[in-house]
Length: 222
Image (tube, rainbow, N blue to C red; front, side, top):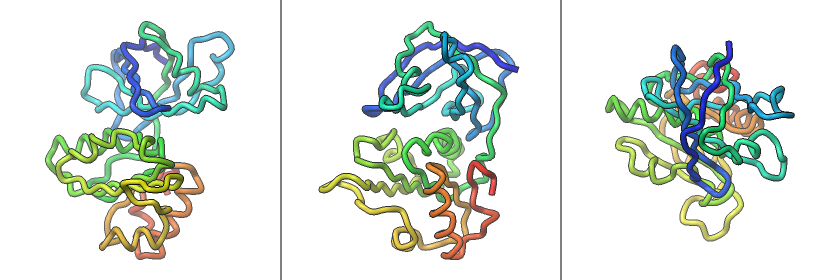
């Protein structure tokens, strides 16, 4: 079943990332970390649904999405960046393998941070944080919600960039050596999200370091 939702506001977070706030339809239920397929109600795009994570918490009155656009593709994300308040889109039934499994280490690349936004918010609200966020991006200006993460009580943050010299954060790839340097324990729950190659490489590195494969949470549910 699909539902139509109306855009309330759009706010720029980074040069190519926006926060979209939509009216919430009746009867919609989802868990932190889950996603929906979002489809533009625009000629030529009604068959181009794409998955996006709910970044609002399930008990909030509005629906929030944080979406990175790719202007050079002229695809769905670029079309979304052109939406204005009052425009409408369709969403489908919630889905997704990334759910809250308790405190742990959250490792994200770029827009892969989105399923972790509501999960970490939930932990912050309950006071049961004890989490680490490792977040890699191309440059510092691409770090989505950086100030939010830096201010979050109980959250240890490790930012790294791969295409910027002289950054005020780490300038290394997230690999086995990086994980060894920044983590002292591997008997924890790990959450991974980002491009598939990144997820595969980091998951393999974590297993080599002793992490339990059953406690590595990814979108595939592996």
